[in-house]
Image 1: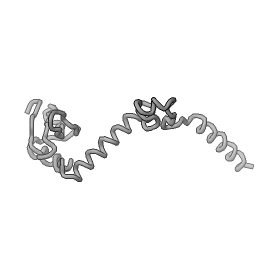
Image 2: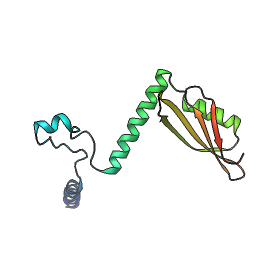
Image 3: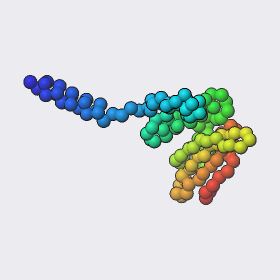
Image 4: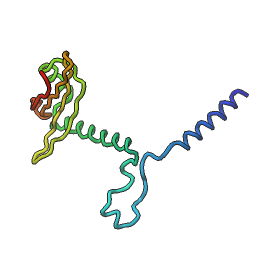
Length: 138
């Protein structure tokens, strides 16, 4: 008798979960053949904004990993060691981004929390590991 209660409870919970679940990706086909040639393909990006940001972050991470493997940029571990040697404190954040212009270059922006409570922003060339600028009180 007790197993029947749990079985029914499990069915009800499963039905509620299925009802609440929404499709993760938009799989709507384009409405016309002309739309296919000029519009972005449908179904490639999630409609939910949080899921879009997660996908974009994953794509940036994947691009950064490929750049490390190709030798275009230094690995994050090496950058953290260089910053720790030159600027004592705790690293509280790291951002990697591509800087535009004629020739694209990668920049690491490393945030260091010093013992005094000041935060340094150390920008480094990701390809060479050289310090480009330091903002904040040293």
